[in-house]
Length: 381
Image 1 (tube, rainbow, N blue to C red):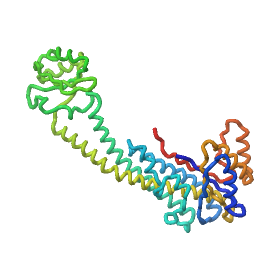
Image 2 (image 1 turned 180 degrees about the horizontal axis):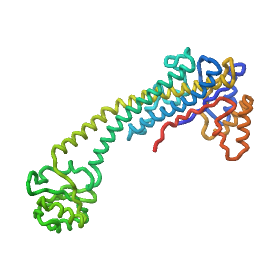
Image 3 (image 1 turned 90 degrees about the vertical axis):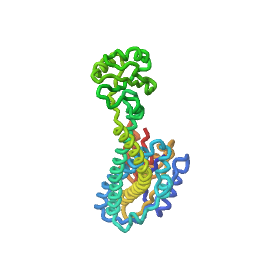
Image 4 (image 1 turned 60 degrees about the horizontal axis):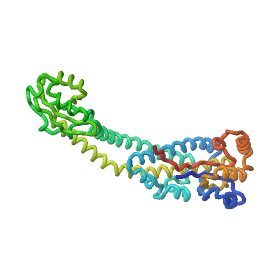
């Protein structure tokens, strides 16, 4: 994805002149792709309210961005093997994010401009807090379901020493309902098969001769059954361990095995049922949160521009998509274009240019109003 610089500068004789100057200054050397960023005539209110609102909007900006990223990241988690499809689901108002930002239009229905700036910010805050709370609840329910299913799947995979044996063994492999006899299951490394056949009858006194059968093999081991008298279990288990034959604790219980299979089917069905509605919810609410985020950026530009450039409201908001190779050059061009606006910002920039190792971008304060919009929302591991 990409990043944008949302800036504003005071109107010259007209705002169009401010725009033309920026375009002329950045046209050479492919410094940036520029778009006008249209902010409607919002209610200004008092200076005191604007100063307080400036701080509140900074916090709201960070919060809404975090929710946008959480929804995007959870979309990637839910889509699992289809992560390449994530980007095509991360849309705002049905269009890709770059298109939405570059063609931004204020949503009058959601955020009526007759309301005060504070009211608009509260509408956004409530809306995004609701999305955040809903996401936590939905993610928790789906993650529990997914976790339980993965635990069952894990039981049915892996080494013969640890995996569930329910889908491997059959009723006829066991002597059942005998007062004296019991069938045990033993994991034998493949390299020790010959030793097993030679010794299993002598591992305890009461082993039934020729009672062993190979029931299942994986890459490393085989699962053998063997029948013996119940009172020989402890001796057999102890002696088997000396030969590296591992006796599994397993009792054949048809009801339990059936319940496990039914639980697996139920969880798998539930996960499939929840998947579609969850992806739809994420898609809709990602769009809502992202739209809200860009409106917060618009509010911040408006408030900061009025605080810096004064009344009456007269500024041009502009959206720059910097060329990656030319970001430093673009910064310098913007500084030359707007350094007359704020001598203190000019001093900061001059100082940072003179002191080696001081990163200019860390200051994040320029003679023009500036906010970054970073569309790199996903943290793929």
